[in-house]
Length: 125
Image (tube, rainbow, N blue to C red; front, side):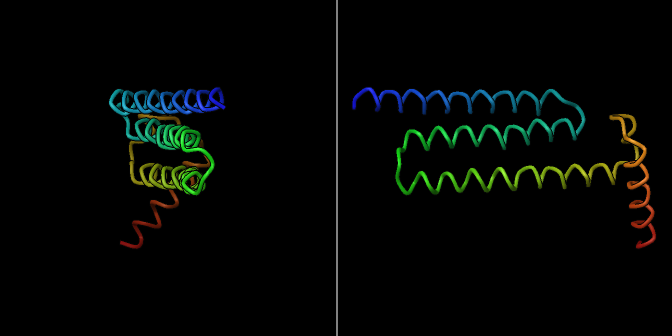
């Protein structure tokens, strides 16, 4: 029984340390990158992966109880909501930035969609 507790503690601690390492990489990426979409990508990866791994580590340390279920639901909610919100914010940046070609390559189909959305927005004003 003692070996099981030490294994649980070691595995949970390793997951927490991996989550902290991902957060450190996220912070470095946010400060290193110059363009907003690159920064947002680094932040979104850190949110989804770092928080997920950290919470899984906490779930392992907590054992099987109601708290583990709640932490699992938080992980599922974050994995569903963080990528969607990051996508919507990046789409807003792509639509509103007229000089996006300077920072990244835009495919022709997406360029056409962005141009149509810009025209529709100008007509509304």
